Image (cartoon, rainbow, N blue to C red):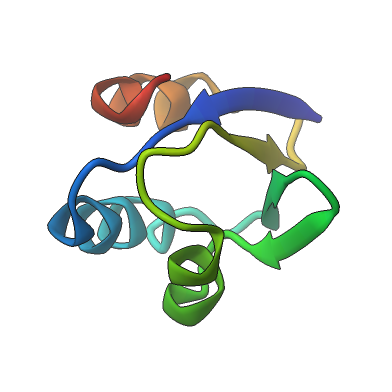
Length: 75
């Protein structure tokens, strides 16, 4: 498992994020406080809000390619 802190400043960034993570077949969750949502769920991520630091949890042994593609969203 790997983790990464993510933040979204604009709703369009969430769409770009989803287009990226949906290319990968392993499971991912996003956590903010006690709220945990599926990282491939538009409504779930929108519920976590903009301009917040959100922890992305990736359940795979090798997540380096995904982390590289998500660098622009890093908090």
